[in-house]
Amino acid sequence: MRYALISDVHGNLEALQVVLHHIDMERPDRLVCLGDLVGYGADPEKCIDIVRERTELVVAGNHDWAAIGKTDISYFNPYAQAAVLWTQKRLGNFHRRYLEKLPLILQEEELLFVHSTPERPEEWNYVFSRVQAAYYLARLSHRLCFIGHSHIPVAFVFRGGEIALVTGPSFRISIEPDLRYLINIGSVGQPRDGDNRASYAVVDLAEQVVEVKRVPYDIPTAQRKILKAGLPEVLAERLAYGQ
Ligand code: ZN
Image 1 (tube, rainbow, N blue to C red):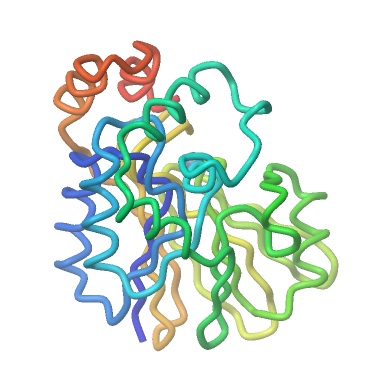
Image 2 (image 1 turned 90 degrees about the vertical axis):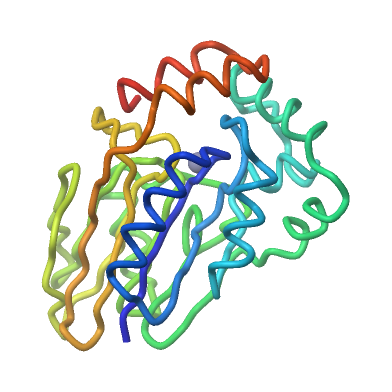
C-alpha cells in the first residue's frame, strides 16, 4: 500500500495543483490530507473542492475549525486572525458543512493521521522538541503517526526511550519494525522551514519507506491573488521566503 500525504494547504491553489500533479506521477493507492485546507491563501473554496474530490481521508486543522467559528482565535497572530475573518466571509454553506464534518483523527492499518497531536488534538498543541515528541511517542498505539500544523518537516524516531531526529527540507527514512515514528510532513501552501517549495509525503508500506518531498510552484501568482483579495501583505511576502 502506498499513501500520499498532504497538509496545510491553506487556500494556496497554485501549490496544491503542482503537488497533486507530482503525486499523480507517484500513483499512490490512497491520498490523505492532514488538515488546514483554508486560512492565509486566496482560494479556500477551490482548495476544499479539490481536496474533497481527490482525497480518501481528511482530518480537520485549527484553521478549518477557525473558519467555521469552531475554535477560539484569540491566540492566533493578527495576520492569521485577519485571514480567518476573510475566509469566514468567503465560505458558503456547502463548504462550511464540509469542514464541520471533518474528524480530528483517523487511522488506517498501522498509520495514525492527525493535524496537531495524537492526544487531545482539539488543543492544537505543537510538537517542536524531542521532549514533546517523546511524550506522544511513548503513548502511541500506532507505529507511525503523521502530523502537520508547524509547517516544518521533521521525523522523530523513538528507539528504546531515545529520540532521533531527521530534519531537512526533504528526507527519506526506512521504517524499522521495532521503532515508532512521529512525522511532520510539512506544508503544501505555506512552508516555514526557510525553503519556499511545497512539501508532501509518500509512505510505502511494502517498501517500508517514508519520503518527504519538495516541489517548486508558481509563488508570484499565489502572491498576486493574496494581495488582490485584500489579505495582509505579509501573507504574500512570506511565501517567497518559506517563512
Ligand atoms: Zn497550518
